[in-house]
Image (cartoon, rainbow, N blue to C red; front, side, top):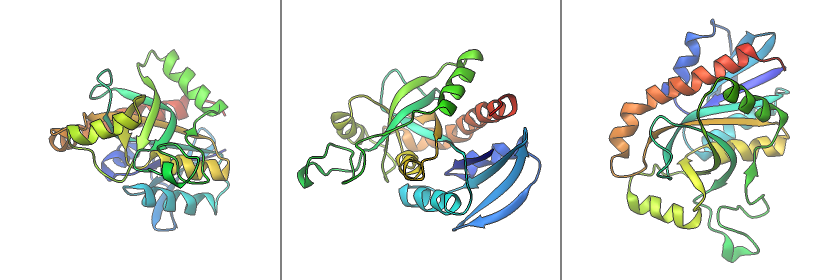
Length: 232
């Protein structure tokens, strides 16, 4: 089985190298993917870069050349819900774009790009298997909608605007919906895991810098243990 792990930031990717021995490196598009063997599976680890275009471009470059069976994305996010706190884990059930406003262009809803699904739902046996793994380990997490946009959210006013359009959103980040959209079009299942680094408010800059490495390590640890203990 061929599995891709995609992360936006170097701070989030570095922890995987503590678990995997050095492997072959290969360029796909503008991203260098490292190739490892884990539990008899081919694993591609790629640092895609920040934002929707980088995420979509570099995952597409990989999926267009390799027959990937499963994509796993990890990284950090900012909370939009008072019950979702710093260092919490979020297992997304679906993604939408919080910066897509196309309701006047036709029969579309907030977060929907014309001619695309309103939300990209993550529903696959692989995701069910990962959820069962977290439950078996007694790991606490939140499930629900995660929203994506190209801005780092760092004020209550920005949060309020997003929450007004997406009252059910748990957190926001900058790549997830783009990864989900690409995976949807390639018909490849996606598992997503986000760890909360900040509250998306005026303290977000300081909180993000302090917590991104910590929560990145937490997410990486969950993914690595899942891959090492699971049979696909």
